Amino acid sequence: MTKQTALLEIREARSDADYHAAYPVIRQLFPQLDMQTYARRVFVARATGYRMFVGTVDGQFVGVIGVIANHNLHDGFVTYIEHVVVDKKFRGHGYGSQLIKFAEDRARAEGCYLIELDTDIGAERAAKLYENSGYQKSGDYYFKQLREENMDGE
Image 1 (cartoon, rainbow, N blue to C red):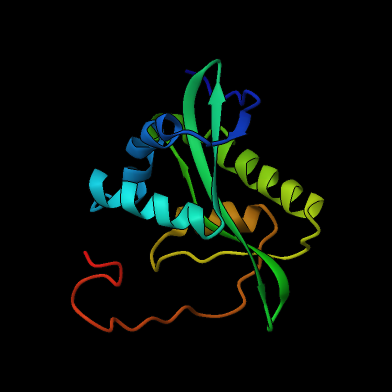
Image 2 (cartoon, rainbow, N blue to C red):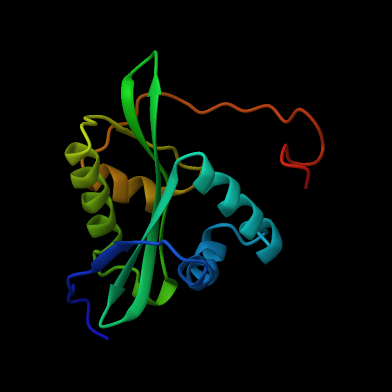
């Protein structure tokens, strides 16, 4: 396969079949995420505003982007990119950039003018993708584990 970039067809994941098809790609970013936990988290996340968009080329699943819109005191109306994942065999073709551009255009159309995201320490490839897409680093991300298992009962 050449490094030529084809235009992604991007649409919202709306069915259980869409989310099931996205799972192998999501696991490339979150390898510890078993199917049962993923299904439970998707159900709750969708109920609280999370949306996943899938990108395909010639009907072949290429990648996903997950976003959630939020109103907060600090920034007002913000779209948060929860994850951008391109299947390993399609990386380096510009598909991540296309997914990000799609999310930005959609956020603008919905009246949002700020997008935020975070990356893990050591995620240089992701950081480069975001910087090449015009994102600026503005701080650090902190967390504190409050109990041994995750907060959703796992």
